[in-house]
Length: 230
Image 1 (tube, rainbow, N blue to C red):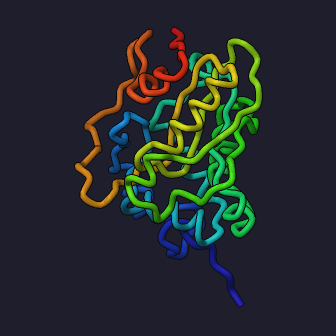
Image 2: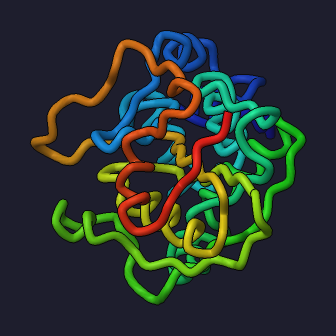
Image 3: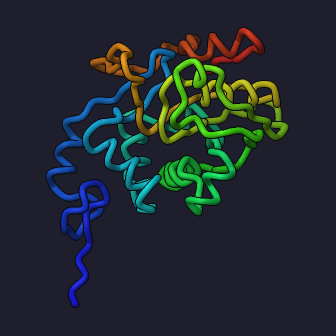
């Protein structure tokens, strides 16, 4: 019996991680950002949606490597001037046990391998349900995190698989700042829109000017200072 490799996104037979149609579709896709200004490599549509579904519900771990590569390229992630270590916003313990892995961790570690920077667990999620399936009001409350104490001056990139309202990543950022992290960046693989939300895909996503904080940082700064480094 002949076993063929299949595209991680559409499951068509192919010898590479992605078939040519899916590769071309990714090349034509634009990066995104949620209303809070958290950047994402793709929108939750087309191949972007297929990759998330493959990773979360079809146990295709290789999708994490594909998403990580898209994040590095599209979000221009560069450890040389932005962050010292990568971490992730952990999913609920129940979902991680059922799935066998934390999808955000897989993406974070794949980014770390590509950039050759450390990846460490800094965040621990308090007991509570996952964000999937919640209403906008419920999502905005966000989950609760606690963070390991950080050394002074540490700069951290926080990765999640999907951003919708941004509540999960912003809660993660606040926990890290409270633990002593000097500078936090929040990014996601895919940006999903709640039903009825206005479109949030910009034509381009330039980096913030030196010394200027993105929109999400201003919200964290209301509870604790976040420093922007040049």
